[in-house]
Amino acid sequence: MQHLQRRRTMGGSYRHKLNVLALIFVILFTNFSACASSETGKITKNDFVLNTVATITLYDSNNEALIDECFDLCRHYESLFSKTDVNSEIYKLNHRETSEVSIETAKLITEGLYYSKLSDGAFDITITPLTSLWNFASESPSVPSAEEIGSAREKVDYTVVTVSGNTVTFSNDYTAIDLGAIAKGYIADKVKELLVSRGIKKAIINLGGNVMCIGGKTATEGFKIGIQYPFEESSIASVTVRDLSVVTSGIYERYFEKDGTLYHHILNPKTGYPYDNNLLSVTIIGENSCTCDALSTTCYALSKDAGTALIEDLDGYYAIFITDDYKLWYTDGTETALNIET
Image 1 (tube, one colour):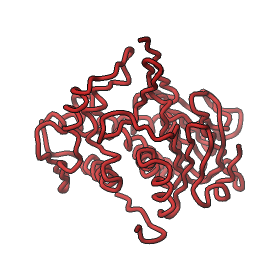
Image 2 (cartoon, one colour; image 1 turned 90 degrees about the horizontal axis):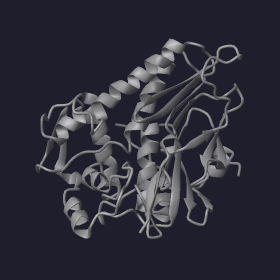
Image 3 (cartoon, rainbow, N blue to C red; image 1 turned 135 degrees about the horizontal axis):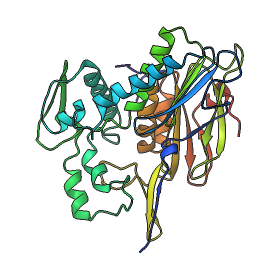
């Protein structure tokens, strides 16, 4: 698990939206194609993995087999971390069929518990009972009753999970783990490791909006990554990065409306309802994609002020908050470090 380095010591009718291509949507200002480019040594390929469309672009190689190997690696981790695949380690843990898991699964659970504790439960990897109850992926989601929410909320408690080596135990029979808020970031880091080990120096890994950049577009030019305009398929700003990951959590990714009220998928473990904190999205930029993934949800849950304080206390990570008036707020140093354009 990567431990964060701190700069200082911390003191009626329904309208349903499920934008699969924008599950944490980031627009890439690069010339993506579905095959090898006319440019020497550049290739892009898409595949459906991790329940989303993933795109990998190599700028200094046309090795299609290497990209296929990356997608196979994604499927390997999906087979470990999926909460719905009956053969996955997480599914078997949640159904108490086993307590022994791979070291990688144990490490990712430990990472999730770290952020659960860091946020005092505002981010909680045992939120499965609530996400299953709301079921935002359904074609016709509905608002659960207060009684149903109360019952599900009682089952959410990361403190009942213990990891010792590769053994994971629960102190009750009903708590379940969901690694969805950090798994894609972890997998993006692993794909980067594979590509770098094969000599790749310039690439973009986009796992359904979890973006990891290797190097830059040229020796002097970084990759320009767009931040989605909430509820639109356009950008509200862009950042220029080298060897960094860009990850966004936003309420527009999965939501539905009932009686004029929007219900989104980022649920408050302590109330059982979607967070209501005047935020539309949070984007985190930093070296480690798993950390960015966890921090994007954590900072959304903590709200703008507390999330800003958390990021500004960490070394090498930046945040962009978009409030419900579509105003952009940046943590200290973000505008200068990332050459933000709006």
